[in-house]
Image: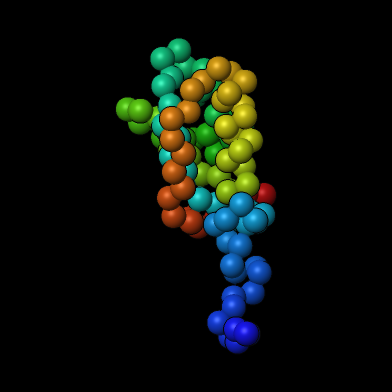
Length: 99
């Protein structure tokens, strides 16, 4: 049996996982093609005016800041707009929280 000291509490062991339902923000990379601007419009609408200012358009996608549990919502949104997603990468946790 493992010692209690080696098992992190649920609150810390779930951070950055699908169980991490917190307001913590992560930098996310979405690799997608956006020839007609549909992906950018959808992302800006999802993020709202203030957070959309931090949306970064890259050659093959976007970087944005989201809580980890919002990633499936963004993927569903882009799929409804018929935007193909080729890769989703979670970078590091950043300062701030979504409220």
